[in-house]
Structure formats: C-alpha cells, structure tokens
Image (tube, rainbow, N blue to C red; front, side, top):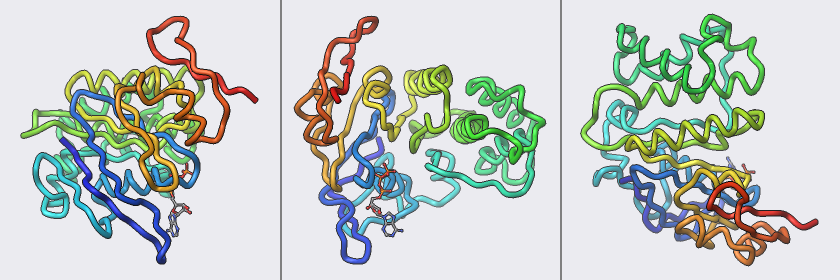
Length: 260
Ligand SMILES: Nc1ncnc2c1ncn2[C@@H]1O[C@H](COP(=O)(O)OP(=O)(O)OP(=O)(O)O)[C@@H](O)[C@H]1O
C-alpha cells in the first residue's frame, strides 16, 4: 500500500495541495484527473518521495518514504515524469536498462537484458532498441520511457507490491498506443502492481481505472470507484465543462461526452 495522509504543500506561501489523503492500492489502477495547475504532478512527486510535503506523511508498505533507503525505494516504485530529457545519444536499450540500475548497479546481467526486452515488447518499443534515443519521435520516446519504468519494477518478487507512478503516460501517443499502454498498465495492476496515473482524458480513466481521484485547486473533490466519481455534476464542477455521462456502448463503464 502506498498512502499519503493529510498532505499540505505550498510554494512561496501559495497553497498547492491542501489536506490531500490518497491511497494507491496494489492490484488496482488509480487515475488522478483535474484541471491544469490543480496540483496533480505535485501530488505524484510527493507520492514518489521526490518532494517532501510541508505537512502530512507518505507511507509505503508501512514505512515512511523518507526512512526508506533510496535504492530500496527505487526497487519498489518507478516514476514516469511529465517530461524527461536525455541529451546524450544513448541507445534505446541503454535507456531502458537504466531502469535496472537499482537492481544491478552499473553491471548488466542477462536477466536485466531479458527484462528490458520484455518491457520494450510491452510498450511496442522493441524495434527501436538500437536507435539513438535522441533521434526518436515524441511518441516513440514516451514508449521507451514507459519501458524503462516497467523494467525498473520488474524481476524477482520483492517484499511487497511494486508501484508505478505515471504522469500523463499517454502524452504524445496516438490513440492506438494510448489504448495499448493503458492496457499494459492495467495488466501490470492485475499482476499485483499498484498503478497511479495522471490522466487528462476522463474517458481513458473510465476505461482503464478502478479508482478515480479528482483534484481541483489542490483539494480532492471526489475519489472512489470510477462509476461513483465520473458523474456529470462532479466533472462539471471540477473541470468547468458541461458534460453528458452515458454508458459506454461497448464496455460497462461511463462514457463522458463534452457539450460545447
Ligand atoms: N517550481 C514551482 N514554483 C512555483 N510554482 C510551481 C512550481 N511547480 C508547480 N508550481 C505551481 O503549482 C501548481 C500546481 O502545479 P502542478 O504541476 O502540480 O499542476 P498539474 O495539475 O500537474 O497541472 P497540469 O495539468 O497543467 O500538468 C501550479 O499553479 C503551478 O504553477
């Protein structure tokens, strides 16, 4: 279990997060949605341990994040940031293998290479393995970074569930790859991982998440089962868009139609 309790965070005296309590549950996909500037990335950074909250606590398997050694933390949770930069022309395989450094240090074992290959296969990046990362398109780079974080939490069983924290994982992806990547996230969750994903499209949240959290102006306005949270009144109040919520024609999930 990865749990943030009563988080408060401010920058230069401006509150960014106020009294935020969330739980990322192993076996489930939790989607975080909310308008631009709501504090979603900030919350993800706090959940990852990269940013200490001003008040409140974050626990992973019962330990305070700040008490976990960095390498142990890196083996238990991987983070896909909103933007990543690789300036040296590493190959795609080298970038994905960087995800294994928390397990193998600077050496590459046969199993790390196999895990990297598997992760690249999952995200449709295997054909790119020998390309220079810097030569890839935005969507290709995103799929490689996703393979890197999947590789980071793969491998021999750990003492507890692992967590994937994804900030807009569908960024730059075409529709086919959006569905593929979120399908991979869901199957990793079905395999026992806890997945926390910042998403902008409530329909993708409806299709792939088990739980949805809506953040607005640094406060949680709704959280719970997808069906309970993705309601027209809640979405309209939080996102400021008039919507009609129907049932999806193909799946038993909400389908949100914006009304201009
Ligand atoms: N380093 C910083 N210094 C000052 N303000 C910051 C800093 N980082 C973020 N903020 C502010 O904190 C607020 C929340 O930012 P955050 O990136 O968490 O929002 P978000 O919900 O992820 O937004 P988006 O959907 O646009 O990515 C915003 O008003 C942002 O301008």
